[in-house]
Every structure is written in structure tokens, then in C-alpha cells.
Length: 240
Figure 1 (tube, rainbow, N blue to C red):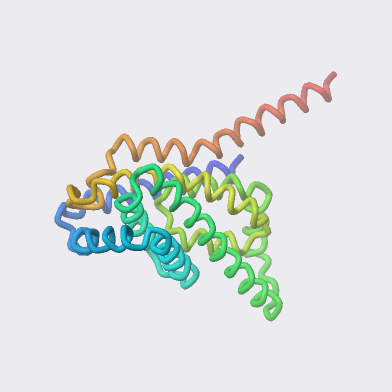
Figure 2: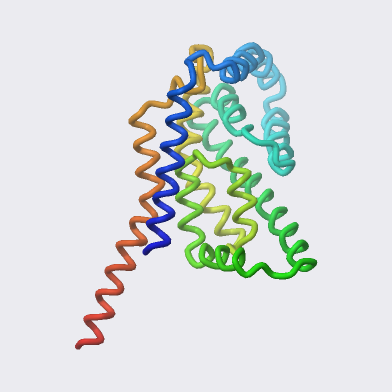
């Protein structure tokens, strides 16, 4: 239980830090403005290319995101999902990008695992690191689901970190598909109205953040409650 409570505390702390950073920034954040201007200036050209090449454009779009992801280029997800929503609409854009993200992140995770295994062979085992990794392996999918729901931890960090564990690739893929979909859906809806957006934060309301916090801690809370109930049942069965 202690490990789970620490994990929840870390997630809440990251959310708090992220909120403080957003509050400290001005609405006219230069990085935000550059990203939005780039998308808005080029979205019509991209839409025209999509109409001209309806079969080729989603393939190129998916391959480009895949290559950038396995090259470990950070913070590309929001830009691509906004474009996906603008090109294919909020629902279809979210579904398409959800599969692209899950496949790309799984490939990134597998590359990270192979690199870690090669490193592990050539180096002496670090007991402290191994202990931390094994601690997450038992319920790895729960922690992965939690951080995917949170959406505040960079995907690259998650992919690399989970590559150090023995979580099965199929489990990583399914959990990533489920865990990333809520935030992808929100960004895709925002992308469908990209012309009216001035900032990346325009569509992230406090209520949405509260919902994401609830989603992110929900898997761990369920784990804590289920462990407590199971422990109580075992104690009663022993007494009987």
C-alpha cells in the first residue's frame, strides 16, 4: 500500500507543478504562439494535400509520427493530434491517431527494452535499480495506465522507463491504447476548431484537469481497495 500511496503523491505533485507552471506563464506564451501559428498557417495546405491524396496522406502522416517517435523527438504528440482532428474530424481523427500513437509508442518501448538488455549484459547489476524495477513489474500495467491517463509525464520518458521492465508488449500496447484515448479525443476536438484557437491551453479547462487527475489515480485506488478487501477476506478465512 505504501508504494501505491507514494505513486499517487508523485502523480498529484506532477499535476500541481504543471498547473503552477501554466499559471506562471502569460497567455501569450511565445512557444505556444509559434506552434499555433505554424499549424494555422499551414493547415489549409495540409488539408488540400489530404483531399488531393486521400489514401497516401494518412499513410505519410502515420509514418512521419512513427519515425519521429522512435527517434525520441519530444512533444510532437499535441501537434500531430491537433492536425489529425483538423484533417479527419474529431471522432475519426481521434480513432486514427489513437492507433498510430499506440503502435509508435510500443515500437519506442521495444527499442528501449532492447537497448536496456544490451546494456544490462555488459554491466554489473545495480541492485537498487533492479529493486525499483521489480517493484513496478508486479502491477506494471496499472502504473502505466495511471501515467497514460495523467498525460502530464512526457510519453518518451514513459516508453523508455517501461522498457526497463518485463511488462509484455501486448499489455503495453492495450494499456497505451486505453490510457491515451481520453486526452487524444480532447485534442482532436480542439484540432477540428483549430482556426479559432489562440493557445494550446484554450481547450484545457480546470474541470478537464480534475477529470484527468481522477482518471490517473483511479487505477491505483482500485488496487489499494482490492488489496485491502482481499487481505481482510484472507484473515477471516484463516480464523474460520
